[in-house]
Image 1 (cartoon, rainbow, N blue to C red):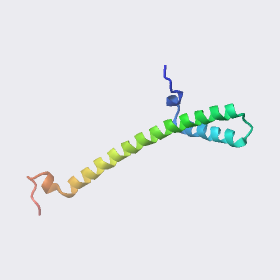
Image 2: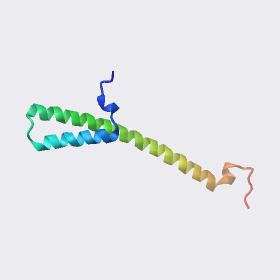
Image 3: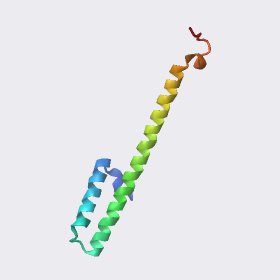
Length: 87
């Protein structure tokens, strides 16, 4: 069993949970212990959301890099394929 229950949530659920934590703390009716516990829950959610964003950024960078490489090869076919003659 995972020690990180946030891993089973969608990114949208993570953000909603984080918003709920902020709202609960901002309301001001929590005891210090309750506010501290809610703050920790919010930080756990924020860490997981940040990990997912970083992972998606890396995926997008790889996709973009592959696209740029393909475009360079299309623009320079004679260099990529020496058998092709320029007109």
